[in-house]
Length: 471
Image 1 (tube, rainbow, N blue to C red):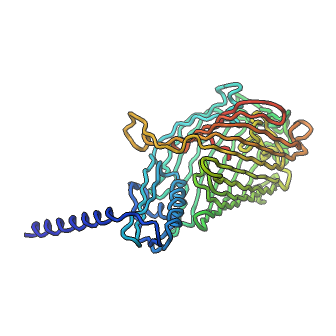
Image 2: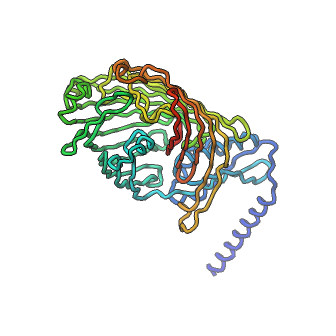
Image 3: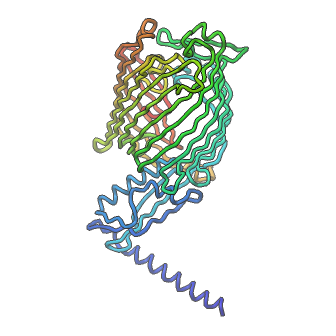
């Protein structure tokens, strides 16, 4: 009897759900008037907790919005969820219950989160510098085991064993959602690094290397503890304390007395760093729309475990703006700079030519105590982001991806101030500028491939390849 009653109840429930579904399907989308959000439904998140996704959504239950504002909120929320880098695809759409009420459906396709990643890196300032010689000694290789969505909470846990040019043994753990409101985060890392070859000076706009195949040229330990505060979806503060313990071969202070402060072969110091970021970019791995403002305050040497009395205060910041001109045309600008307010040892000196550079000067390093960089891009979307399926791969976490293609024109300019390097380096305290054209491919797990032809202020014409976005 109980089973019969249960069967009747279940049949009635299924009939009610089916009738409700037919009613929803029969209602045509009405883009007039205001809509009230009554609920959120999330599909596809087998591991990721719902609160991690909803934290990125700019809409809320009870919001009453005109259709255009609702669409804008869904588009921005879709970008925010995608920028978690936890999903291959994100789609947010409304389900209209009646002329006033809507449910927001969020559909995600999760990535593969736990995997060993083979390391194959080039230990040069960029791929093009290595390609000149193609020497295998510049390669790093090894294995990194990561869990990029630990416990389904967007926590990042990783262990790295890297060999080759720069040996690295490290572990890190990032917890970006420490409290219920997901505004606080903790970040830990520890690592050991060593090289048989290091840079000890810069001459003729190139790095000079010291190599000791029989002994370590440099080895150091690095420990970091960071606290983040995410005030809202777009504004983030980060404070970090780092400890460095470095030692170089006894020959280095002879070749470069200013390698460490005080002229010795060891350096131990604490670093304090504060950074602030305001980021509204749509897709951070290759943005087309949005704004990034960032600032960094950095103090090397806090008067503790600092026998050589190191004390270098550095400020840096920048502004990046990406916006759509119309149709398939986009425009982007980047302005950034850095100032060392005290003269740093060579070990801590970085100008242009490393992670930041004027395009067209990839073969040069321009060191100094301060620099400014201006970059601009005019882009045309040849192929809009298009979903593709790769055959013979059973898992949709790898078989389904997207591809997009862009052509661009660019102009860059930069300036490096460095009186200590000026005599031996012709590009220091000189205006650097370049222009060129490029082709950008964006695809698979946030990968970007850029091929650019440029002419720089020296009249040199070259073709360069890069594997990340320009800015």
